[in-house]
Image (cartoon, rainbow over all chains, first blue to last red; front, top):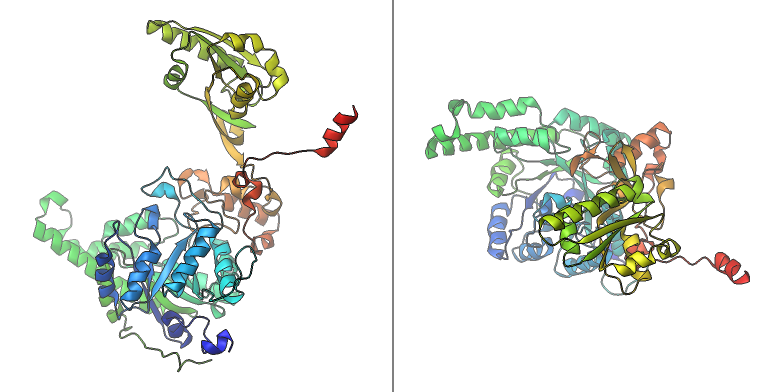
Length: 343
Length: 227
């Protein structure tokens, strides 16, 4: 039997792949591992996401801050019955370490892998570290795909035995510069093997629609599954910060004004003029508005041709995923049996 | 050129502490051009160390001399007497110069007066910027003459990461994004199609990753043998 027959036509047969192949609008979430060796943190966060997402991204030392490894946390998620998307950056490992981690992650039951360059270490808590960047994210996509489909290592040597079969993803930054190159860079990632794409946070839907128009003109949306990145705003301050200081994120003023409007009853008061209860009420009002905006974004993004799902980034606020998914009419999540899948 | 920067006077004082006789050796090539270790800087460093040691009550005899190139042994022969006479040689050459002195004078304690920074060029008065990482396998033919190995913070080979904004790198607004520069240049030359090609993982063996490097030119060695 060939791999194709065994897997019923799927590349991998992960839940994420099955949901997407069946034509459902996919939902992925994100889970940031702790800065400790406490596996209980992963289990608690997993409980908040269970049933509400098709797969959960596990970040890999995000913003270059040391955390439990994505594969270690992913193994716990597998034990918990949730499906991880292992994020893998090129910042901390060379091609030897990357390939051995890929073999280990597969053996531990992981089936989705997101290939990233990685945030530069100057942002994190070890800015004096030496970085690696032996390969880049596109070369990583190529490498993972060749291990799966050709059973070869990066050096070209063939290997025997079980190959690591990953449903392979890549990130896209539709609004980063040089902006005209971004759809072509996406095409380059898909040509290198990206089966699915998760984008940077989208708040400016018309700008994203223009990007998707270009992506469609290149035919890329038919060669991969594009999941638009969304995330609930926590406060007007967070919205302003992202607009001003985070590269590649556009936040329309209208959304900042909506967030400010949600805090109107407490407007004009400094933090020390508010009681603890008032601060809590204001925070709840902001968060509710943030969740509502996120729901509306999902509903609008879903109308764009070529958007196959959403990737909800609610790091350190996993509680928000449930109301967002329910509010967007995406609950319950579909169950797609391997046997029932179309070839 | 090799671009270097002088260490602080405090560090220089520590490096030469305990010596009675110090000779500061300048270099007349790259570090002269980048105002870090030429004859002028060697003289200033020597006099600063003399004054500092005097003020601290332990006067040291600090002299200075500058050779045309510290990285070639025949130029070092010219200062053999001064070097052998000193307790410590403070080299204001690049890392190559310091090691050339150590290699040439096996009984000499030599310390570095500079931090060797990079291979680069002056972009404006008083400003130097890195241009080459000496990776040993030049890719400039793929990128319109702008090096992503030296100038992209992540040495990416297949285009810009998501941290490129308004022409600069996310790690520092003072650093131009190499891939924005490459994109603009290829665009203006009508060669953007080059960016669509997949660049495979780089062979880093030609870089420092392959171990210390050496070039042997048989053609030149044969000429020498014939002579």
